[in-house]
Image (cartoon, rainbow over all chains, first blue to last red; front, top):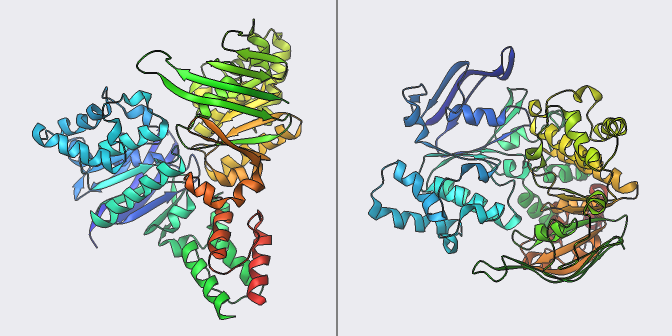
Length: 276
Length: 283
């Protein structure tokens, strides 16, 4: 297993004596799509800020791409990670969409001759090519977030952290970004760490981490983590829709296994229906 | 009628090169006491529309009636206070608008501006804080020490303290966890059941299906549809053409029906869904 992120005995507190992150350890494999679930205040966003070195850990180790995160290695670690926050208003710098995407590229000293092509490539990926000369502040929320994502993708980090990045987008924007992220995951082998409330997104990811009060409650494949109904309910999380339907049908006496993927459940039900 | 729009146009930065025609001939009647969802994708004019409901924006042409108050391009009501008291608008991420030292001061700021004396305002603050699910111990805390979800509750309490007849909410659950979102929507439903008109801008069709009576669909600055929730979600191909997601249960039924099932597409309830699927498998 090729670990790209290793977190060992990590703790963090905003206030002395009250641990927001309480001695957690986990590894993320290169090229996987991991979702972190937990209610507001469970410490999800704090983890992403710690990984980026935006907050300073109290104790423990963070190793990204084999590099131990310290004051000296901060920029090296950060160059591997792109983070997309929930509110895009806080991440704009350039006066136009073009400038904003260029800002990051200038920071990594990209040859200015290559820059235009890169800007075009990623602006078109997030469907914002027509807006290159617009002011970011005048865009709608969804458009802003697409620009922010383009800016990060253009830096080609090996890890992308999405901190509820699509929660402000409309369904069309959400779909575009989800499709883009999963393409980057599958075709470019990018590691995705998505902090989300979307249980259906988690059901389709490779691994799920459940967080509560700064501790990891569960970490595993969706089929192992997301079928523990009681545990999810205790954490005030949603139950996957397909699981609720398959459980309900079992109670009615149907012999059907538990599903968390809607697509697979639909296929199974249609198969049963056509056999009658 | 609680809210009426007649041929309302809105053009931003009119007669400049940046002119943008955001509302085009909007006619609308929203009945008193209904919980109405306002949907449509980004840029469709939803936010522009709701800002006309308390005269933050004036129409470029046409008439807006908020109960007995008339707003037109030239006839701005003499005083906006009665209107602002009638229609409370909660913006997206209202927690960014908190500013006072204590939660109490933040909540009573609005009522005091409307001339309510301090004692009454404090009583009101206690009442609305309870409504949003926070106890009195929060009154003396700083709003900036709260979590995001709690801040939002305080900001909404600040609007409720003005006791508006119409409550307009722009994506009030964005960024909340599922449990927080549910509590928030139950709160709005409760407020609605006391006879107040609630208008909810939402991208979450599951919320629309579960909580709202009617839906207004905005597209390219126009009101394309104003129908009951049941009627709207029957029109799957129309919604798909607008890239509006179906509620998860409706979309599931749609997928099954495309493959030979005949399940009622207006089912909202999990138990009924399971019964229907079971019924068809047993036939």
